[in-house]
Length: 314
Image (cartoon, rainbow, N blue to C red; front, side, top):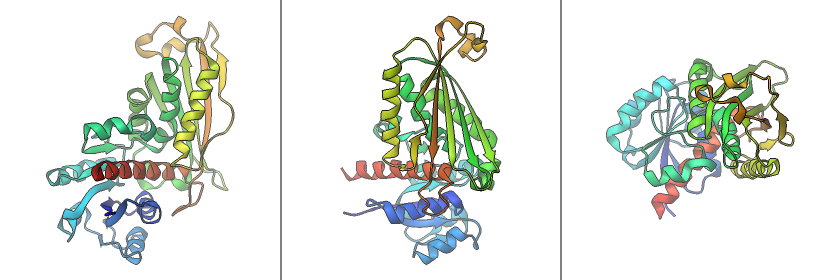
């Protein structure tokens, strides 16, 4: 079967890990180009050793490359600001873009939640939200499938060593984009996102906490929905797992949770706090296993691209 050619813009940690995943894991995708701006980057050097065509002249270099017309999907693993420029330059060429930055030009995509919807609508630019979003939004959605979620808050804790300059430069975009996607994709009435860069040694693997405020609902049904969602994510991110059983805590009458609800919603609707604790270990294709935050982004992006390729082949 003929493989779909893809390009990766961004020769840093995320882009390099994604390239290696395409080469090692994908039966439907083929690397057509690795694109960077630093000719001495490790990502471009690895690409050359793996016989992948390269350019260090950014998106303009990609467009000028022999074989550009054969590339159908372009991953952008740069930064929010750079993606806006790259998307504008690529717009006339009809490529499918998968955005691994928080730019959010296109619709948010979290594979087990809404991938099929966006494959049907044929959106040309799909946004992968953030690493924290990919880890936690499936859980918010799993709870909201059972009962309305008035408020959801996620805390993503990652090793400082796994946060490169792109991540550090996009902290504000991370929190804003993730918060919006918690509502738009997760189904929460209001969402909030927090990221913590932990300098602990040895480096910690990614850990995520999801809090949801709900009314009266069947706890066993919520647990079953969360466990089913964890199993779905685990299919493409093997290091994704629950740390412990889903927790339920009654909300006391005097707790001021009304300040968290959408539009100051009524306190009487909220009776229970749901807490879900996750960890994400990386597959260590390029970076150490503690960099699960990068692994879940590249794994989700690979899932999206393979689904696009499968749809085009039908």
